[in-house]
Length: 86
Image (cartoon, rainbow, N blue to C red; front, side, top):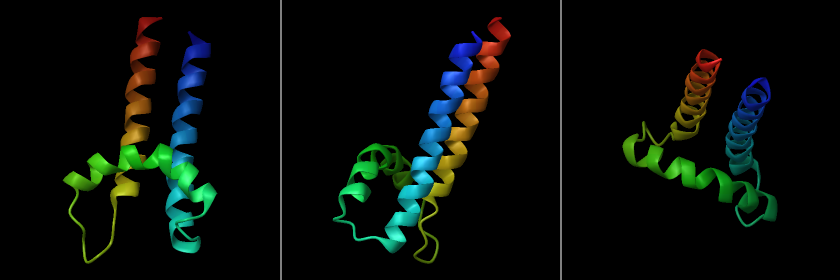
């Protein structure tokens, strides 16, 4: 069970890191860049539902921050459930 928990933790960490990198690259890199588009293929499908719910505040997009928090929350819940099964 510890291996499953480790894999889940690692997966969620990679996803949170991907959202963070994608957000930073959006400020500094051309959106036609291959790296930006590759990370976007993973991150954008998760960001779209959050953007539909979250309004923009003065032109600022807080959906990446909300997504990172939701991913960490989901990780915590999932790991807690798995630990309670052992």
